[in-house]
Figure 1 (cartoon, rainbow, N blue to C red):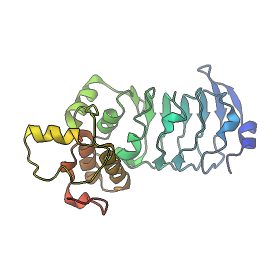
Figure 2 (tube, rainbow, N blue to C red; figure 1 turned 135 degrees about the vertical axis):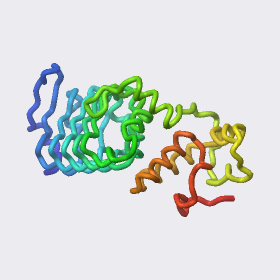
Figure 3 (cartoon, rainbow, N blue to C red; figure 1 turned 90 degrees about the vertical axis):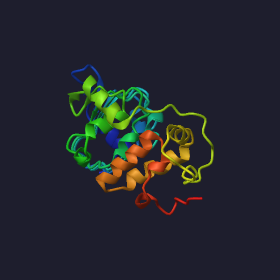
Figure 4 (spheres, helix red, strand yellow; figure 1 turned 120 degrees about the horizontal axis):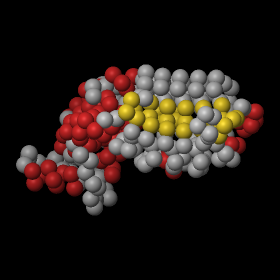
Length: 245
């Protein structure tokens, strides 16, 4: 059943136990998100549980919305730049879906108010040190999979994956391989590589993460991304877009 404006208007709405306005769209076999402009931004919580949604996308500007329940769907992908449409998102429940890649979770990193996330019963949980990866990329999270994130976990994530580097002034163009020529392993070159890790490089690596199905490769790519060092990219992960000088 498509999520029409009529379905939005006919669906039950109520004040939940947290005294928040909630719209109940559960169990309608909705295949994708659309027509949410019909809500007129009148809800704190949207419940999409038990539908057939495969991608988290297509939200209009909903400033009031802060909780989305999407457990038991078919979600594999998360759209880019969702924070521009739902800037006040605090809680996102994605339990029992099909998310496999850390790259999808990275897309949530610009949600500065997101403090509660559930990826319970998703394939992504099979990745080694899964919690630490999520904690690293979403540092504002307080609760992951209904379990409070501890200080010890934050320290482990920082130690394993490295502190995020602040973006410096970077070249606007990207020729992959430009930092490889004459590279060595001393600290000066590492610092130079970090400074030259452009936005285009970051997008290139994120795309590789999203496309990869090998958990070992995902971890390697994640390390390239977090260290901002394109020289760590092994030959077998270079695509046709990668052309060394």
